[in-house]
Image (tube, rainbow, N blue to C red; front, top):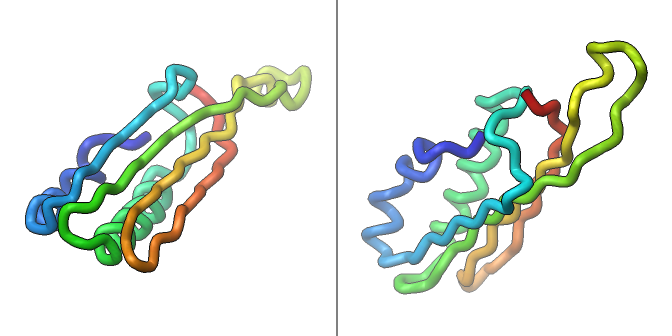
Amino acid sequence: MLNSQVFSTFRGAIISKDITLSKHFTSDVPAKVIGDRSRIEHVISNLLSNAIKFSNEGESISVSVAAESLPPLGSNNDENKDRSIITITILDEGTKSISFLVTMELDII
């Protein structure tokens, strides 16, 4: 879901501003989910880009990912998949600091 490619895109900007990027994934986050990968990565990239833009040199940005299991939808095999709500939080220390919270309901593979 959140592979290193998303973060490596911003490596140069993070290094040039001496920003510390911390990533925390809770143990309940599934390794794979069913969802629109390009849209998820696009949203996260935009939020991370803004966090970098509004952070001053030497500040830090934190990315946290957590999951919460949801009950099955029904008795049909297709509807009875494991489902989770994935919450992605991006915090920065910039002068216009805003914490971003992205919540998505996804099926677990």
